[in-house]
Image: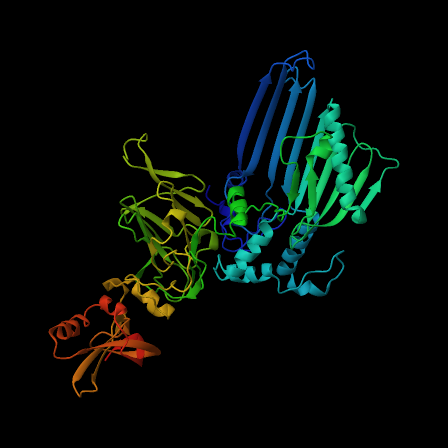
Amino acid sequence: MEPDSDEVHIPGRFRHGKSKVMEPGVAMETDKMKQWLNRILRRTIAVQLERSPVPTKESEDFKMCVTTELEFPAVPEWRLLQDRRVRTTTDIKWGRDCSGNDKRMKILAKWQKSDEQRRQERMEELQEQHPSSQEDRSEEISRPDKNTIYSACVQDRQKGLVETPVCRKALEQRSLLQQMDIDVEYHNLPRWLKEMSSALKQHVFHIFFDRLTVQDIDIRNDDNKMRMRCTIDRDQKEMNVTMATPEENAEISRISIEEPKIRLDLSKLLKTRLPMKTHWSIDFPMRFPSTEKTMVEQYMDFMMDDKFTPRCKFQPNDRIQTFDGVEFPYRVGSCDHILAKDASPEQRFMVLVNKPHRDNTEKTLKVFLEGKKIEMSMNNQQQSHQSSDEEDNQMQITIDGRQVALPDLIVHKIYRDEEDAGSPVMFTLQKVGRKVKVECDRLGVTVETDRHSAEVKISNAYRGKLAGLCGNFDGEHHSELEGPNREVYSSPFDFGLSYRIPSQECHEQGKSLSVMRNVRLAQLNQFNKKETCFSKMPVAQCPEGYSAVRSETRRMEFHCLPSELDITKKYTELHKTKPLDMMASKRTDRTEEVEAELECEME
């Protein structure tokens, strides 16, 4: 599955049509790789029902067989150029047997991109590849604005930035499937089902009579077949529906899918009284699927306001979005920082992150799971002049220091007993394009990275039990910048510094890292006695022998103690080496502005 030799030096571009030119930041694909990427996840559900005949009404046994096959892309789409589909097929046979010779109905539903959606995307791609031809208006549809989300994402990916906010928005747009086609084939339907279908159609026509167009003259549609097409607009607000039956063609335009107004009364449709609730109202927005997430994630996120799968994102522009949805800027630098960790007594997992090089966006990720250390880092032996597709192989993956080869799309299982494939699986690793995913189902933790960005997904069972740059996941925004000792910071820099793990490897020549310490002040109280005041919160300070070259002002609260007390002398010595956690809960005796020393150089 390595790139073909004649493809390696092809310049990176977004691919369109049958061109072999690829979008920047995406590995070249051989035919075998395309087969892997286009592989479909299929699920089949088969139900068989048998019963004896109803006395005085039936003379033969009744049997029904329902087979439903669901097809959905095996992995979420991470490329902007895509053409994937979602398909559902239901085959229903009933009567004396399930041979299909008696009564039968087959329903095929397929979601895909609409013609208008494809045309719009094609125009965007052509404009990006040929910007000089913007004045050529020979196309049937005028070219879109040059400053589209797609164009902005192209520029980001050409810089090596794959998961920027604008690219996520562009991917969301291009992953949406805006058209649904439904084909229904039927044979020997019972009278009651025909009557109910007719009543339902008349009911819908009555609701949307002002937007309905019907053609019933010179119709040559297939017998025993019905075809329906639903197409939504780009904003997912309205839908157009066309329907073809053996008797007529009908079209309903501009149906609102944000506030549907459909009310069904089954007792009227069936023309009989039912011992159950018969009034069903569709009072929630309809949703068309996307290939960006699985169908379960999409519908659960929709019902739970995008909070079904808690996730933290560390973006290429050094901005962090916490589990509770708060976003703030912070540059981690070459020191390891705790991105997320289980702060409960079990301490089931921890994720560390650093950015070894100041001038680029590549990050190194360390994941501690089930007693194992998984490290995903850059291969520094690679040369900078290599093409973009070769750079895709720069990420090294090690488990406890042992390098692991990870072919694309192959799920690599790590067993509790390495010599026994029948032992429990601790976690899995998988590489899809430029992304590497570590997943532990037992602990409910998933970590993904593409070198430039990182994402941590966790189970809702961790609510209020987390710590790190991703927040404590308590659902509250006011306490989002909570440090390791439950102190709440007002500055993202101070908050990030509290989760830094200093080491010799992250020191630069002639410079030093700031350390978090409480500020100490001396004063005379109202009785002219000496007092020593400590800031209730630690703040960035330069170590001894270094001076600040960059600083910011912080307004801090202080707690004061008589200087002659033994406990005061103890705190004075202790504050030189570590933060004074106990000060956070003390009373506030004074408020002062102090300098947070952000960068330090040797004096």
